[in-house]
Structures are given as C-alpha cells and as structure tokens.
Length: 508
Image (tube, rainbow, N blue to C red; front, side, top):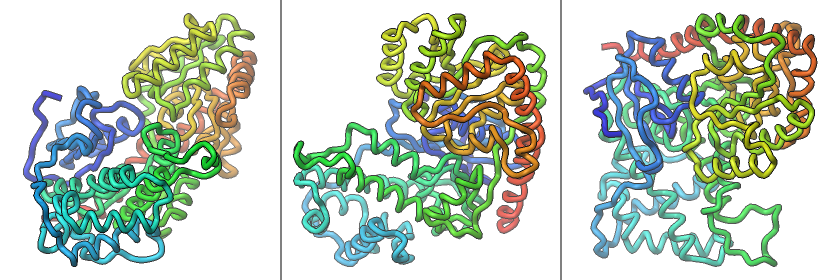
C-alpha cells in the first residue's frame, strides 16, 4: 500500500467499502469494480474501511480513470492521542450516550434523537461527548460501571470495560472520517456495518442521498463470524456453560451490529438486495419495505461465451471451488467431499481457486486436512487465477459455503456452460432451479445440497460427472438462465436509474 492513491476535491458518488475493493479480491469487489467502469461519465470516490493496516497488502485491481479519489482507514490500529488526564465529562452528552446505549439494546423500540445523528455530538466536547471523554472521563467510568451492574451476566468487569471501549471506539473514528471526507453528491455503501454507519452519518449531516446495496446480509454474516470467533471472552465456568445459550459478550457484539445496521436502513433512501429472500430479511431487520428493491447481479456474457467451446467432451473430472479460503466458504466440507468423490472417480481432482492469505491458519488447516485424508495430490490450492483460464478446464463448479448472497461465480460458470453443485444458501436455489413459472421451466442447472454435508455434496457431484446426459441438460439450463435473467445490461440499467434519480437532486 505504498503507491500514491488518486486524490480529488469532490466526487459525484462516494462508495463506502468495508474490507473489500480494491484490496481484497472476490465477488463483491469485482462488482464494485464493474459498477465504476460501467459509469465512465461519473466521478467516483472510494472510502476503504479495514481492520488493521497489516491485514491488507497491494491493490488487486487496476483503478479506473473515473475513480478520482481513494482513501483508506484502519479502525483497529489507529493511535489515540487524547489527553489521559482526569476529566469530568459532559453530563448532558452522557445522558445522550445512555440514550444511544439503550437504542443499541433495542433499536426497534424507539427513535434516536437528531442530536445523536449529528457529527458535532461526537467531535465537539461542548455539544456532545468527544472520543477523549469517552475513553478517559469520570462520567464514562461511572456510565460503564453502572451498565455492568445493570445488564452484564459475565462476572468479569475488566472484560466488560474493554469490550465496551473497543466496541464503541470505531463510532468516533467514523465520525472523524465523515467530517473530513471530500464532498460528494451521493453516498453508496455496499454493506451496513461500519461502512453503513459512516453512510448514515454522512446522510444525516449533509442531507445528500444514501444508497445501500447488500450482497450478503451483513448482520447475518457477522453473526456467523462472531459465533465462531475465539477472541470473544466467555468467563462462565464449565457448570455454567449451556451450549444453547450465547455467551454475553457474543450477544453484545451481535446486538451492536444489528443496531448499526438498523441505523443505516433508517438513513438510506434506496436499499438494494440481490434476491427476494434477502429483501425480506432486510425488512425483518428494520428496513422500510417501500425503500427496498431487488437487483440481481449481472455479468458480461461477451467475455465468457467463447469459452463454452473450449471444454472437452465428456467434461473433465475437475471439481472447481472458486472462492476465498476462509471458514464461511467451508472449504473443509469440500475437501471431505473430495475423499468420497475420488473413491468413486479416481481420476477426479478438486481445485480451490482463490486467495489463501486472508486467514492463514484456516488455509493451513485445510492443507493439513487434505493431507490427512490422503488427498495431497488431489486437492490443489491454486490461489488467485483468471477465471478465463480455469472455467473451461472444470467439469462442475462447487460452492460449499455456509452463507452467500447471489454469487457471481455461479453466473460466470453458467456463462461458460458449467453446471453447479451448491449448498442451500442465499439465492443459490433460485439460480439452480429458477424463480417463478417461466424461470423454473428452463430446468435445473445443477444440484442443491444441505450445508455442512460432505456426503451429499459428493453424491451430487458424482451424479453430474457420471451422467453425460444429465450434465448436458444442466449445462443447457445454465446458459439459458444466465442469458435471460442475469446480464450486465439488466443490472446496470437499474443502477443507472437509481444514480440518475439521486444525482438529479444535486446537479450544479
């Protein structure tokens, strides 16, 4: 990250990006890159929000010319230079902090006051509670102590104290980012979470439109991550731990992200999802139904269509998983499925194509599992590759994920005539079997199996690779479905309508 980033004094659309483009490759980042390139007349700014600087390396994409501004912020390695001398704090401000805390506990039961939505509340020590007061004031200590006694079911005050501080500190950092961000006519966040909270602050403090596009439901995916995380404390002893009850600190983090998701939903004027089930989940989580709409992903067929004729007949016994090597993709399930597949089809290989550096420990666990199952020469981790080099050499595309939105990789596979075997996550069932009478009439483009079931995953792959007629039927359905419903023209036209409507409010 040593290269100079493009800098500007203003932009048409500011994209608010958490942990994605341009430093992380994958479906969401590819979508962002495609959106920017599809509107060459629009000047974009990109605000990248990451965890720690050391977690991200070089830019993964060639930045388009109309991306005129890029800035990065790392909310968990910022050094705080606030004075640590004893201070009293602002009593009126801490009354509002109590209101904010109660809203985090139950965001659907009340509305936040306008004062808490304003930047001065977080940045001005007279008008609100600035970061130094939250970290070091006597009122902050009293506030946290009182909340511990009132609500916490975990016996450790020290863990509670640091959890509250670490959880809420990004709010002040995001307020600082909002204060210094170059002017934009429209804000477009690609998730709720920290980027969504930033978008809501910008909306409330500039009056300019906020668009939200969710590829996966952020609160759902964060919940999965938090339930699996090892860094969250659980001080209950062995007799107190009930596996059916979420530990207090996990529940605290989950509620926090649900609340800031609600804050973003309330501020956004347009809320986009990739498929109907996701739209319904947004409504359940607090989005107003009239703001929501479904815009499926779309791909450029012209780039991938020529690859259809390059696949051998019969299709090669290559099972390809395109995705990051991270737990949410459940690579281990794919590896275990490969053990069964190789037992039946000894010539089969499993290719894992995607970045391996995001969670190195998980990657090493996956390699160890492959070796322990005698698959070191059968399961190949190929890292980042061009899909145009990979897809013509695969016989089946596999997704073993425990959470997805509407995966671009399935559409890209379909464009080359590649059937898919996927877990029943996100819109995958819709992509395989169709949605509505006309779409369903196209037929099945593969198979759907349950989450975390390597035997079912293996059987479905074997059924496709072992039956030439079934494979060809699924391939034909894949091509027809993507050409009819999931082209970039359909997607871009809908986003053009949204952008033009939002920009029209601020034409100079």
